[in-house]
Length: 369
Ligand SMILES: NC(=O)c1ccc[n+]([C@@H]2O[C@H](COP(=O)([O-])OP(=O)(O)OC[C@H]3O[C@@H](n4cnc5c(N)ncnc54)[C@H](O)[C@@H]3O)[C@@H](O)[C@H]2O)c1
Image 1 (cartoon, rainbow, N blue to C red):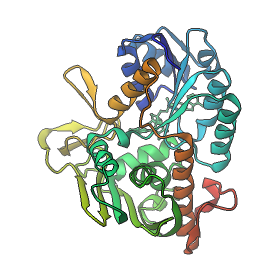
Image 2 (image 1 turned 90 degrees about the horizontal axis):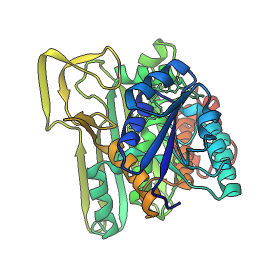
Image 3 (image 1 turned 60 degrees about the vertical axis):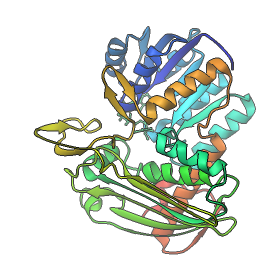
Image 4 (image 1 turned 45 degrees about the horizontal axis):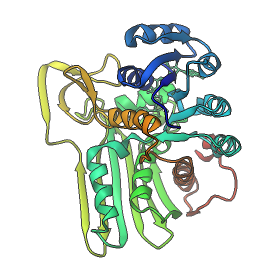
């Protein structure tokens, strides 16, 4: 697609759909914005806030709208497949939030539709558009760490945000919903190599007591095809008022000629306020101390939205105009990410190593204890 007219449909008017719609409405090539939500009142409210042209309680209505040629799917994870397939069938370019789906069955339905239609689909792994990770990829392209022998990627967040995610979809566990970003980053950094085996352990407690099957902490060792060994870890069970407002993470890459350490815990920009600091993702939640810069999507500042999700949305819209390639996650890469995180959950559930690719269909709901 190469076009200086873009009409965008945003499907799902929640937290991320709101950001996408507001960013799209500001883009110079976007002349038309339509918004849908399963809850029509939400679609209407966001249309009013963002100045959108049209809103509806029907996804199909906005996807099929003649003014629309690009679709952003920002529904909860388990509801991605239907609007993505519909948009592809109608020949519209699609950006869908991560993960591509929660089951390989849904992911494969999307990939099959893409194959039939020859359409355009990218997946919103916005960590790729965080500047520290773009810089890291650039160094990998130049080969400065040499052959990667291993590494580490771990991410922490407070349980306040985890509960907000689990409320949206109880199957969107920290592994499938969050660790997926770091699987994506490592697979991107180690491009051409892919995960072949997973060993993992997890501990339950805090989330289980609240009625969810998600683990409080999960650690996995993933072996890549050439033998590189990467340690992945996630805990979204830190105390509710822990100062992170999103992801506090650390990524390390160990190579034959170099080492890259990316300290993304955000300890370098603290704010303390007796007045409280509102949490961008969890309504009604506030902290007294915050690691500024830790909002996963980015931040509003002086009238605009800055950060990974801003960079990612603008880059995608720009690419529709210019036709230039971008570094957005491809559907095939997103499927590898999903399969690897499903394998991590299966390895935790069975206590056994899991080989990749998975030989049978693993439904997200079935692999958990
Ligand atoms: N890139 C990032 O920084 C980032 C951050 C958080 C979430 N996400 C991803 O964004 C997606 C949405 O997350 P969110 O936090 O905005 O969720 P949310 O709960 O805030 O919003 C989801 C919205 O979708 C609506 N909805 C539910 N089912 C629908 C359907 N079938 N059709 C239309 N609308 C429907 C809900 O009413 C709600 O308004 C998820 O895939 C999530 O993983 C990305």
